[in-house]
Length: 395
Image 1 (cartoon, rainbow, N blue to C red):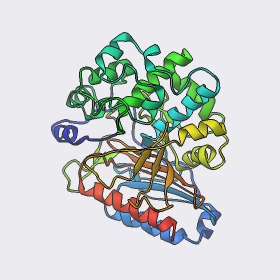
Image 2 (cartoon, one colour; image 1 turned 30 degrees about the vertical axis):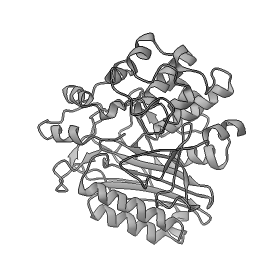
Image 3 (cartoon, rainbow, N blue to C red; image 1 turned 45 degrees about the horizontal axis):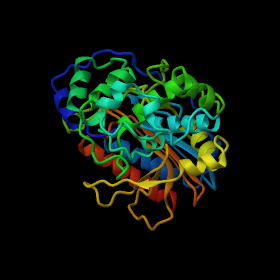
Image 4 (cartoon, rainbow, N blue to C red; image 1 turned 180 degrees about the horizontal axis):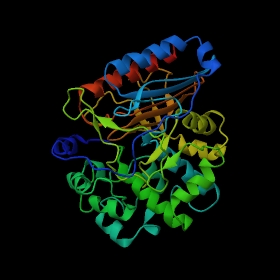
């Protein structure tokens, strides 16, 4: 999710309330021998320690390459309680949620319950079709690869004002979509590609209709349980465990971190809400795009039909969007073979990456309990960490 700057400015005047997620407790973890023996053990650990020393509250990282798997961490999951951030710590993975819902959609296609080329008109209410510009006539595929041009509710001032009035509200999809009513589209339907959280919000409403029950029930039954992802939760439908990290943001841009854990930016409605560990993220991304055991070959081809995102504010954009999946280069060299399949996650107090680099057979998953959607010095620290980490994978 993007563009939280205005909300964070308003948040200066707001006193955080106690919400669903209490203080963090430590999980049980012992450093694994394979991590210590990994030839890049010290490189990775020193990197985590360096960026925590520069202000990021906590990080967990997992890398699997031809030398085996390495998992490590640094910093704190809960600053006030002095709880260490460990590889087993559960943390919010934000928009990585979209990749799970995309996978569920392809599984439903395999079961014959819908087609990617179905128009959403048959699944959504007349009110939504009339009031959300570019919605009528859009296909399921266009929702998934972000070619609808539909307004992104996460850029809505009225949404953040509503959030401030009720920060830990459990939003329904029907409530959230109202923030897109009457908003101008970014471009004509199907004419370009630009990431919008509203697309996956609408997709979740489509899935509820197709399945005839809440999509999160099918997600657990068809994706999480078969992969034995026991440390993954879909808030606010699932209660998150006490080993969940707090989320922070540098509100005053002076490295004095504010706890924003319980500000709920619409979790549980397709575009965000998953909490997980680096180990569970590895299970999922490797099953999906390395081992290719979740989807059929034909559906994987549909999922990996990528469209380049056109961002007028970033001519060097390195993002391609598939039907529920991202392709990213990270180094802005689109002639390189160092691209990854997966998804990023950015929310108010949390950030995460989950990618598999097919040309190098490398998996890289990390979670950070700091929000990077709005401008701050620590946002720059985070992106320096991401760049240095990505470069280190191939050295």
